[in-house]
Image: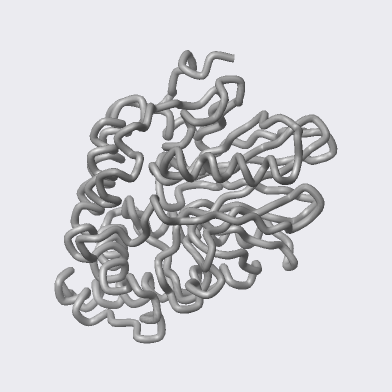
Length: 338
């Protein structure tokens, strides 16, 4: 299957809108955090954690200690080994990290890597695609392919600014999906004794988030819509509170109580850990609506809405006032808010 011949069904206008929101928000983030990257693609070391027979999470070393302190953590992924071959989740930021993933797979099996899933278009989840062999089938959301096809040069410039020069980003060659998941769509893959579902639950952090579910092992990979366990918070990166809250609630309802969650940037969580994210967004929605009803401006709402119970996250100072409250205010001020 030629991975470069599949055309996207989303419009160029939608991709441009996603890109502009992404850059506008995140360039502001860059200025407000620090000059140094929050994690360094040249030093991160990945390790695998067995969750069930043939089912592994790939997690940055030290994540178990960092997550409860609310510290930023590099990208988390995973792989599933079937009798016929392997499915990998996330290709990581650069060649160095992508090769680490493949080495972790090789430490567990000689079976070929057949599939690679990108949960979003973000570079730390998809830039390593070009490192994998050409015969690996890449699975993406249709919006992810459209974004990469149209905006990879701008995206690489942004990522270099945020993650630094010399982190392998300059060498990235864009490689997009062979199999595309449509908005609201779902596909199932049989690896041989291992059935994997890849689904779009709805708008989560972007308009192209994929969730990977292994029903027998009861493991869900979420990508960025669920960043990490408490005290980490969801990022309303593209600015949709109502849809994101609906999607995360749907995810919670769709998985059993004993399910495990592999988030986008942290160690393995329990299903109940997702409630922290839902409860936070619910509180933001309630408090912002009250502020709007009182006639407060966005600036007044941001100043008033401190939510001290959720301030343990190291990035709270920009995620909450600069991303989430403005997104909620805009969403709830619109004619279709509920």
